[in-house]
Length: 593
Picture 1 (tube, helix red, strand yellow):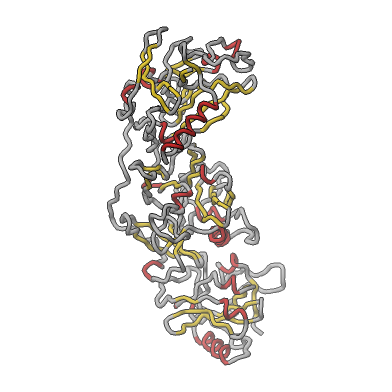
Picture 2: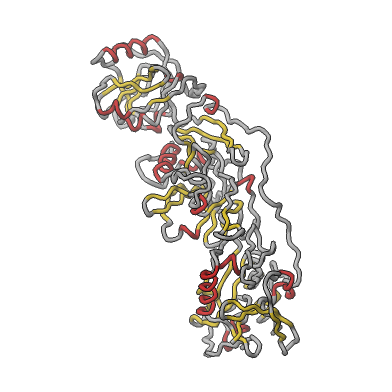
């Protein structure tokens, strides 16, 4: 009887070594050992091609033997039980010429005493005994290239098991305009942004982060095929199950029975050049050359670069994000947050790669090519706030009698707003600062106006209305001039609702100034002339200039918090009803009583 060794898929990747089942009396795998797997589903993770010709695998599930053979132009696993259900499950490949060859291959001779119950098996056994066979190894990746004909970009590809993936993040600049306008709706940004470090992404290095609407091509600009999404023809957005299969295949050293996380898969999928923040010193080797880099994600306009987040295709009503970092590999539902997310895209080929050119055992570098990645982002210079107003809007003026400053005002629906941030000076360095600062350096009041603490906004001392104190002031004027007041949450809501009734442009885009002071393509259309500029905030130091602006409302929430309305560079909504601590300093837009 043939000495059959039961191997897991992980163990099968290092065949013909001492990798036997230590829990049994079986001897280590030797030259006279057949490969043994439990099911046809496991076998289908192994490719059958010229390099694996005559390889024999025992299938424990139905006590059958499968041999890698060529039928016509196709290679397939042939069962010795053609009438069994297993035969119908076997996949075939048209790999007429594959240069793939396992690096752990050993030429061996099989014994002629293999189990035989049909002429097919007898013929297979004879073939095996007279020729060498090479173990199938799904852990050995094969490499190729794809050129996206839409823009000419090349992407490296990697075939792992029975999947072919892009080995780089998609970098297609998907452009959609708001309905009935010529205004571009921002739905993708260069990845690699970090609010705490990098204010600009790097498309060439990290690819792009897409909203799900963009990733799924909800506008049907690329294709009417739902599965394809934003991917090139012949490729598609991976499903939850495809991400799961990748994690299991790459989890060479670990238990493959669980769903996630796959404890060891990250070692073989992450870029190993030192780009990752790796506090636990997880050994990274990128052996699959999947090249995952910390491209990060965007949530509610905030960008983080702690991991790599990728979209999975929506299934039923469920949205999924695959997160990969040194700390682990996980697939998480984001149903309630999907429209607030932007994540990277890795496309999967429709079917297994069969072109020998793209099944190289060496990484293939793309030829030189040119692509327009969009305008080069330059650091903007501060100009007076009036410079950034919408020249198509008719503004009125108001003079603050307290200091003689002149403000442009704008009528939006039935409301009259200041079109510039308040710039009335009170207790500098205690209750108000010039907006647009960085670190401990104050910004430019002429451009951004001033930032006020909650007490400053109420025109009270910190001991009356500051952090830790209930203000006991129900009036709404605050620091605004006579005839004007601090807006309520409801008044900001009215503003947002009105915009939605007159245009398809999202409220956030309609309110932000059309200025490069908003970083990373975050500028708006300024459709209604509100001309909001990214003044940032002050909380011991200046933060988030060019990225965020928030306006105090007159709503207090306990003795520590007030409510702000916020706009962000990489987000097209007006966020209302967010809490902020009273010792933080934000902008003020007064509304006419």
